[in-house]
Image 1 (cartoon, rainbow, N blue to C red):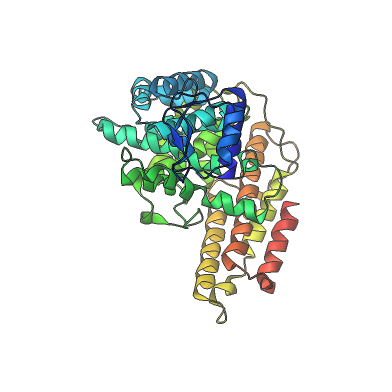
Image 2 (tube, rainbow, N blue to C red; image 1 turned 90 degrees about the vertical axis):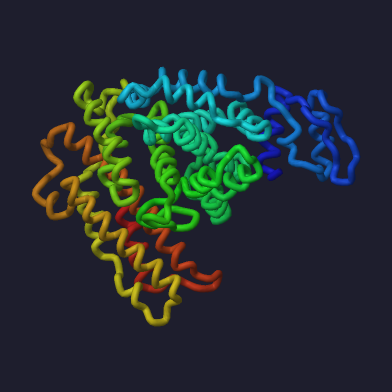
Length: 425
């Protein structure tokens, strides 16, 4: 058990002590706690002094442990509080079937315990997982679909971030720049989630693979393996999009439907086209019933200062990518491939800006003064989304060059990263 998960269990023990469902032994075969004993803070401290014979989550059961009906209850609560989620689940009359499938997800006791820890200690993470499961089901649902092919992608959505409880808890609510170690943990959490699930025979290999792939993107810019195209499994594509949708539909996110629409329109190279079209078609139906900006009941987002100028600057810096890095004869093959991939992503982002009418040439004739408020609101959101993508792209460029501890980035790459930072500032 990782130190971070031990800390989360400590918080559970302090507030709602779990019960030992099996006797707990040390690695030397010494019985430490009898079955049925409530593990209070004193007993938990005693357990932590020993190397245990089996993972602690195999022996503990939380109060009101998570089960199918508890998942259903949480989902119903989320649907009530998230209008866009409610609309999507009503789209095609899938809500009842999805709730039934959610209740049927297999939960071995160790997995149920970890979900219970998430519910009691990290409730936002737990609600995000349940929402991701619902959206994964909505993305795959179609007439005649076998129950197995609905339940298992939903299970992948529910369990994809199980590994987040085993890494630095600061990553659950990141603020500011991450340290190199925190970033390493973040990039590895899909692998941790998969490892936690592999020992449970209730979950097929396709599910484990989807969990590993839930942050992979079709253009190869995801993690942890930079998979691209057909190397990402069908369920992996589903969970990749579902977890992004879940993050955008969290309560308190202003203009969540508009954000989701813009995300898909400006990232068509990263998500499965058929899945993206399904979401966009549903959002068009939502737009016919409500204004996308008001459906959440939130006030409009404060516009970005001079979004037109920012977008023109983003287009310029994307066009300034030093393509010669991909043909540097002194670079290793891995670095050449990495720089070629970053170059492709720069070109794709410029095409996407043009597709949504926000390329430099298109915006040169459009000033910030006296523009329609809805247009400026949308341009502000595009600017925010592209700023995030550009910042991520610059970080990935440095990471894929992978300089040694005593090695500097090439001058051209360092200069381009500096241009990005200046543009974002």
